[in-house]
Picture 1 (spheres, protein in one colour):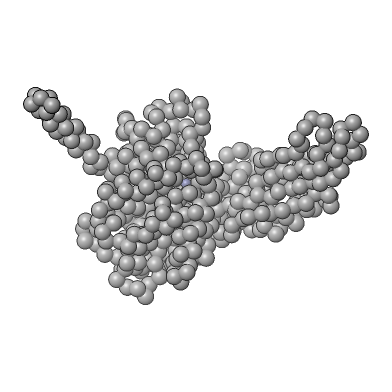
Picture 2 (cartoon, protein in one colour; picture 1 turned 90 degrees about the horizontal axis):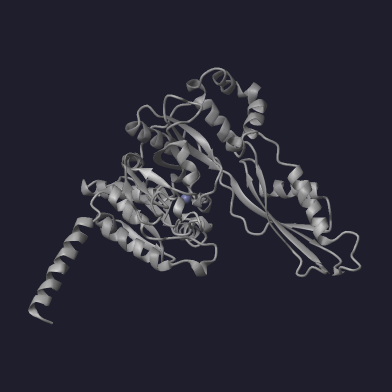
Length: 475
Ligand SMILES: [Zn+2]
């Protein structure tokens, strides 16, 4: 190599290094943008998952939050999930659990060009951070760590023990991550005063309350249950078919199920939400929501008529799979279908099966519930955790209305049922309602301002939880 060539290499290395330095993730928004660039995608088939991305992501966390990784006890569970314990000074107090997840859903093939910026480029543009995971749920995971790192920089130490559990497979059921971490903690005899998972957000433009943002703190979530229905019977050559084929029998059963939806009703968390917003709505909603003892059935039927609100007032029925037959001239001996239900609080797997058996009413059709996780209960809307969250929101968005609500989707929370009686779902992100379809959809983004404030809220929540003496609201 000639001298001048060597010189050129040295100079270009310096240029390269300094550009790396300039690109160093110096601010929370830059760190979130960097987090988005790790393609930690969960696929239904584990063979497709690139676990290298999860390893790199976790190393990135270690570099980004050195105080957290130095001070907290950090355990990798099932290699890729992270359990972090911030030991409190008063071990007589029950700890508080904070959960989030590092995995994201895939991009639907063909929709990439519809994104304003590529989904894994981590672009900050026009005061927004774009990419898959900016709302679900890397902002949650990064937000807790930003808040903890900031507190550690101020030499803060919690009175009560705080635990972070970051799963790596929430989007495909959480059985490798959250469930393993929950089992590990259960084995250690841990019991939490309360916990917070993802779910609730602060909605800037709630149609019911025009003049202020509404923070929805989910005190319950719908239960996820899939039933498998199987019809078995005579098969054979299609030239001499049976009077009723397995396909016909099963199809008729499914049609009956779809024709008999669950009745619309107001569950406890939805009643709590409507009553909490009532004083801030206009007439006639103010009267209607303040007198649900009278107007409840009307409100339920009204809400069930709108696709946006229907899931809040009904256990839903979705026929999702149907399999039968291998050849066009063979009548199959077996037909199988799967129905995915999302149950409102109050409905149970037992009551569901009983209901479906009654509707199907055919001994030739069997109904199996397969694997299902426990049903989360309803957290206390006046409990300490709720008070801590409400105070944290008020500190950052003084004009916001904080109300209990119901999450119509599912989270990792259900794996922690045995560990925390009061389970809340809330990450303090302010969104417009137009943004919510981008979660699992196209064009997911968070505004920089919303993200920075969500870190402020996370900080307030950590401080409130760490104190362990938040006053409980008097009913
Ligand atoms: Zn999520």
